[in-house]
Image (cartoon, rainbow, N blue to C red; front, side, top):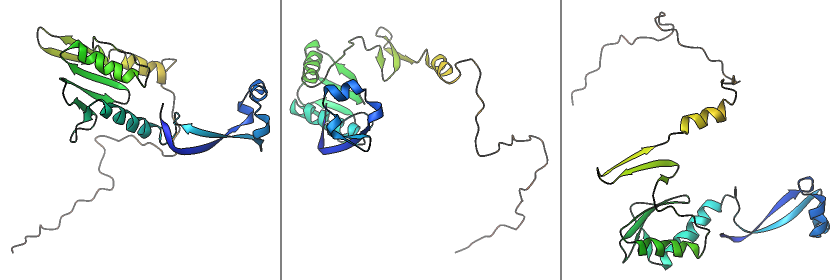
Length: 193
C-alpha cells in the first residue's frame, strides 16, 4: 500500500511466467535475454524499502488524525485529545482505550488506507495468547502451541535430522585432565600512585 520514493526496476525470468499471461498482457514485446523488465512503483514483500516505507506512511497517516508517536518510546502512539493509546509492532496494534467511540475512531482511520481486522477481546497480540482476569487485575500471557508447532516444523517425522557443518564438534570430557589451559603463576603486580 506504500509507494517507493522513485520507481525501481526488476527482471522476471520468462520461465516463471505462464505463456498464457505473456500473450494476454502482450508481454512478449518486453522480453530481453529470457527476462521481462518490470517497473515497480509500490513496495512489495522482500524489497529493502518495504518495511520502512510502510512505517513512514502509517506514521504520517496517523499524525494527520492527531496520533503522535512518543519521542522516547518508539512504537507507542498517543492521541493528542482522546484518551486512547496503542503500541504498534509490524501490523499488530495493542490498544488501550476507555470509550468504544475512540476505538471505532481508530479503526475508521486505519480503514481509510488499509484492510483491517479487529478483535476487541484482546486475546492475542504479536502471536501471544493473552488471558485477562479483570476481577483479579491480572494478565497471563502464554504460547500454548509454540513448542508443538516448532517440533512439527523442524522435526516433521518426530526425529531431529543430522546437521552437516564445516566444523567438527568435540563434546566436552567432563572430569578429564586439563589439556592445554595454562595457569598464570606470576605474582600480582601492585601499583601505588
